Amino acid sequence: MHEKHLTYFKVENFKRFDSFEMNDIGQFNLIVGDNNVGKTSVLEALLFDKETMNFTHRLLTVLFEFRKVANNTQNPIKLFLGSKPENPKFFISYHNKETEEIVLGKIVLRTASGENERIAEETYNTETAKEKIPYVPFHLGYDQDLITYYSKAIQKSRQVKKDFIFALKALVPTIENVEISLDSDTPILLISQTDKDEILPLSLSGEGTIKLIRILMKILVNQGKRLMIDEVDAGVHYKKFKDFWRTVLLAAKENDVQLFMTTHNIECLQYFKEVLEETEMIDLQKEARCFEMVELPNGSVKSYTRGYEEFANAIDLGNNIRGGKL
Amino acid sequence: MKKMTIFVENTTDMDFLRKLVKIIYNHDLSDQRGVGGFILMSGAGNEKSQNKAYFEKSTDSGCVNLVFEDADYKNNSTYGFEKQKERLEKLAEELNFDFFLFPNHQDDGNLEIILENCLSKRASEIVACLNVYHECLEKKGLGHKNPKTYHNRWNMIESALLDIKKPEKRDFSDEQIWFIKENPYLAPLINFLDQYFTSEPSLK
Image (cartoon, rainbow over all chains, first blue to last red; front, side, top):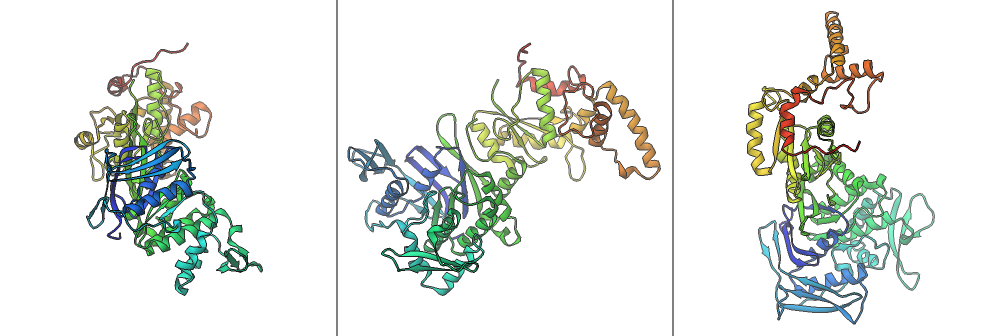
């Protein structure tokens, strides 16, 4: 695993969590649990960046752009860094439909190199472009950001483009080329397939194909970093899960990307296990983890870590690993 | 009654314990596979390596953890009662559970020994017939065609007494075959369960 990848993560006073930690993190991490247990909030906390403004911009972009928390000047959303003292180290106010206060407390991360990272007090280097945010929301289909990814990360290198199209064959075996069209006012992505004469807009492709394209592009632009994917299974047909997993995991391995992915789907978990049993994938087993998030009787949320063997055993025996109240 | 998670080796253990608790305490144990129900462990020796997260989650959720495993027979690959007891006593402190070793928390053996001792009088008579049948097959060098295993024998008893070839699920409450209620052989197991279950009134 890349030495910058996380092996431990703890967040305090973040959204619904007083304190939440994840131990023994691997490179390929599934996060499962009941509705409203806070899986997506964990992904949001993992947007953490030592540069405070990067983190707040990432977080706010996810909340406003992806999760559609509406603006309302009467009821601001508030972000603090530190433990919400009278004079917080950092404070930002945004506008929200309903009164909601987000308090960012202490965040401690431990990387594979053993280095501890803490929030810096300085604020600089704003990173506003949403295509730079290492996050794949579950509902986002075709959007203009894909053009940016494609032009910046893929089409500049023949080899990268070749690898990208090869990877897409997992879901679209007949795909031949992807290109940008400038024929209309707004550039669009087109795909050509060996079995079709017309070259069609990518936006007409199925949700699963667009999802895979988005994930692959995000992996390519986040080399050596971490990527958070909400509801990784959304839009993928169960018969394509194996091909989907093989493609995503190999691309992440090749590009040293650490993945954090939420899901509710048992078939998605089963195929994750089965793909990792394949001869060429066995090496990846040691980096696979499943985190089961559970709300305890006292209202706190705890995660239980399963390595590949424990996870695979539970799946094979039909024991529940997807959380839920008793 | 406290919430509990019951860790067993396989589905036969689970089915037997559910019926036993229903017959003795009139209590319906959930057949859900998870904390608050049953966890299948796929054999002894997997408590920590494969199931640590379940023990932790169950304890954190306020459940009592009960482990039921075969004592087995001492040989190269299995433990026998004394070794199993010693091994689980050490683990019980770390993973927070109480345990009972089949058949009676005293001798080497397994769940099959309990079930053999829970056959009804009528079923035992069939066993006598089957013993003659198996002896005869072996003399003719055909023993391997229908091996003398417990599960084979119970299938044949069910086939003879219930007029079914092979039930989808063994019904331990069927008194034509099984003798559970007031069976003295089950006393050690029931003494153990008494610590965690109380009889619930019947709705008759």
